[in-house]
Length: 70
Image 1 (cartoon, rainbow, N blue to C red):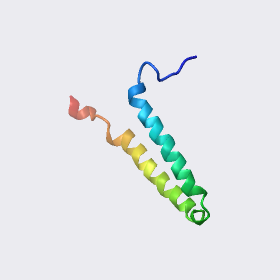
Image 2: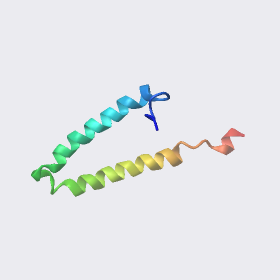
Image 3: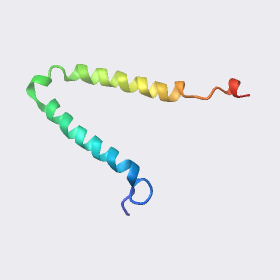
Image 4: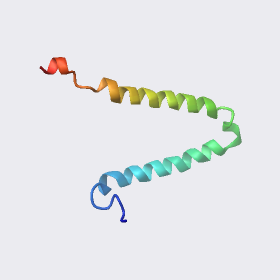
């Protein structure tokens, strides 16, 4: 096995991987704090709804209409 991102897409994916790792570490610092525990479920629901909106848009709003194409 080798490093999977070495030859093909390392230039594009390495900054994304580094940013998401850093964001995850910083987000966990906030989530672990005692004052945030009461609000954490609400933030989870809000982020879930936002993620579902983006999933819906990516599957249904970006389709090429076959009727207009013909």
